[in-house]
Length: 554
Image (tube, rainbow, N blue to C red; front, side, top):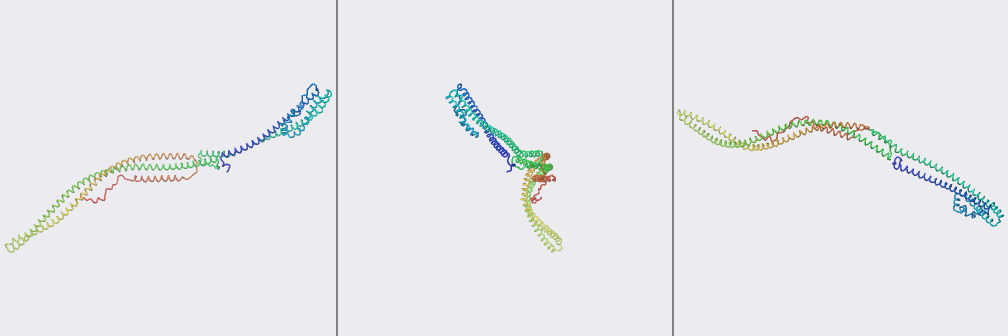
């Protein structure tokens, strides 16, 4: 995993872990150096203490020798008050204790000197015993000479030997102390140097690591701030190219996502503002068309209302006429029934007349025969019968004319009877038709009444339609005003969005479809309004019916 892709928590954990590790190593090294310094310092202290002890013990033995010398000089004035046991003097107690071993462990070079010191030290103390013994055995003169010799030859010589060894011990101790001092100083300097170098190294490491972390955080933050400032200034074309997955990278990714979202919002708002502007213009035109159409519809509704009122009046007139026709048809049916009866009586009378005329015909025939007979008899009478013959001829002519007239009357009567019978049959057939006509007229009357009621309802509906149309016209005007306000707001929105700088892009498909649907809606509105502008006042009622041919004219 690359360093720039590690999150800040892990980076700080790694940095502080390494720093803590370095500090731990540094602390261990410093602790070791301090321990070494403390050890060397303790060696120096112990060396100083040893040197001090050796000096004190040497001084003790000097005092011891002085006391012994005073005793030797004035044996009768002083009591020998010196320690004669080499193990019980302070040096002897130290020498035969563990402190000597510690001193030998501390300074191994002293071991041989301590071993070398044991004999002279014992002899030194034994010289005091020897002086004391000599003092007790000798006379006073011999005593002075003997103890003086012993003191000078043994005590002082042994003291000199002890002094030489003490000097060597002191010298070696001083050298050891000096070496330890040098080591202590060197280790102190080394520790200080290491401390300084470690501090410098840790500081450099901390600075470098801080720089690395800062570069990984501050540089993306600065670029993110610059990027955010550009976005705050409305420049959505700003770019930031930082590819890392830590917190700074996530911040950059979030800022890029914010820019993309703002860009999409601006695109959408711009497209929406343009669509709203275009739709507002179309909506204004549609509202104006709707207002004009509504006004025309109101005028047409008034004309329709007038036509419906006129139609209602005509329907009422038709109803009255139908009722009058019904009465006339009923009266005509009654009269036709009476006429049918009269025709029947006329037929019967004509038949009687025909019978009577046949009698006249017979009479004329008989008269004609009688005239012929009279003419025959007149011819037989000769001259006397000429006048009668003329009368008979005239009677015969009259009989012939009467017979012809009777035959014609008979024929006319026969045809009249036939016509009368046919008329009677026709009258009988007319009565059901008239009754059917009366029933149809009743139905027409009822239908006319219903039509009149329907026309009134239609008139009321048209009045309501006219009122609604007027309200629609008012609403259309309000819609036109609102659409103009919408267009103004859309322009303001477009001006506000123009604050943002984005790349030129094509309008989204959604906007295109929205405008297309708005255009289609406007076309539908125009198609709906077109008949209103061309439509004339009034209505055309189809009052003809297929059953109209069933009626007859009287």
